[in-house]
Length: 124
Image 1 (cartoon, rainbow, N blue to C red):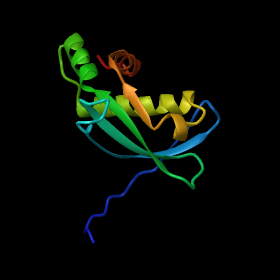
Image 2: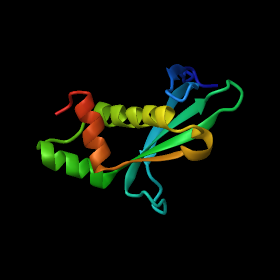
Image 3: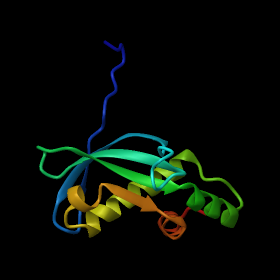
Image 4: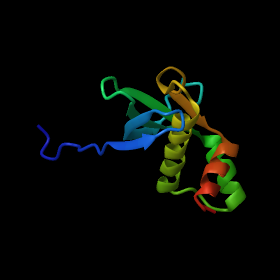
């Protein structure tokens, strides 16, 4: 047994569709080379809306989006800013999709969406 087991902090989000979601961040990794979204960073969240069934949601932050943003702002995104963009993409799915489990398991952040979500946070 690991001396320091990972403690996951479950968070709650009330979506505009009327569902209350619980989620936690599992981790991030480079998208698999054969993934249609590759090259990208895949942020993985475990999500539940009924406290019975938990499922993974992958948010793909494309390399093209990151490079486009960096060029436009003359700097690279920090890890925290990338995570914030992924989390806001997850929240958008909670707000807009009636059935995240069926229709929101693979979400993409393109250049336009990245600019939009980071602007909403005041990131420049």
